[in-house]
Length: 114
Length: 122
Image (cartoon, rainbow over all chains, first blue to last red; front, side):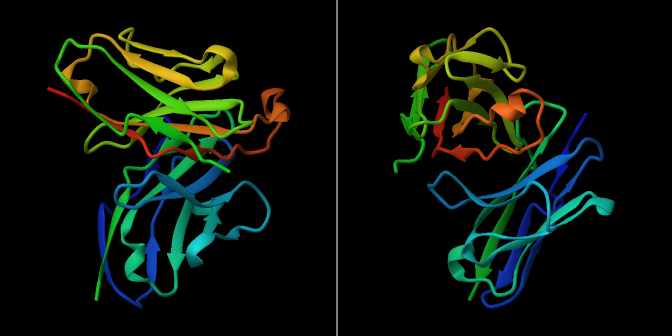
């Protein structure tokens, strides 16, 4: 079965520090890759996506992600974290051979300390 | 432009009762999806509408769940009778139809999510 793994359930970083959230997916059909963020009391907001082309994609709020096909990874990065970035982050993958359904990782909860 | 809206935001019901969740997609979006997140688990796909037709309902857990999208606009998801394990957050998402993909093309599909409905079954 196709799957998405976010190995870190919780991450704590200091404000101003850099951030990297990991995402791996099971090897298989061409993936379409997404990162969503859910702030407390809010819905899922799209941060960025990768369909094709340049493997380094820029998103909103200063986030970027890099697709590495050889590692089946799509890690999310931010050079300097702000307190408002505290939220839960979801990696999602749409596999081109399995309809339009998004397959989600379990999410990574980010805590930002002063 | 208004985003995806869902109603109610919270619902608390007793086991055996019926609950109906509503989703209004972004205007002009013919794709509509339902997902569910049970506590401690990942967000799981339930089903996909294209206009009023069910394109994929492979994620529906059982026949206690009924989704409809009459007229191809808003959608409802009814749970009858509700069980304890149905508790969770139900998300709706919408996107524009990519007819090239429906025909077997390769473009991706960007789904925009609503705030979710938190369902608690006691």
